[in-house]
Image (tube, rainbow, N blue to C red):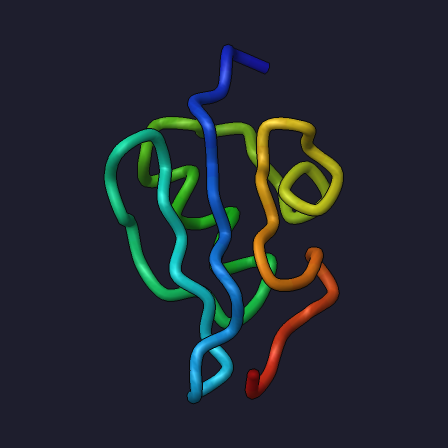
Length: 72
């Protein structure tokens, strides 16, 4: 896998989604690990899977880890 830019997944919002930032750019609101993986693929990380997102050391989880989804 190519070098990964820093990824930050923010705490769940009122609607349960989590903002996702790749490098210095916000790329979307995720509701599942699959959403995060899709945002990363669109950002050029073509071979990223949901399992990579959950365990990747380059992902900073704020306000709960990869299992924290739903209303905050």
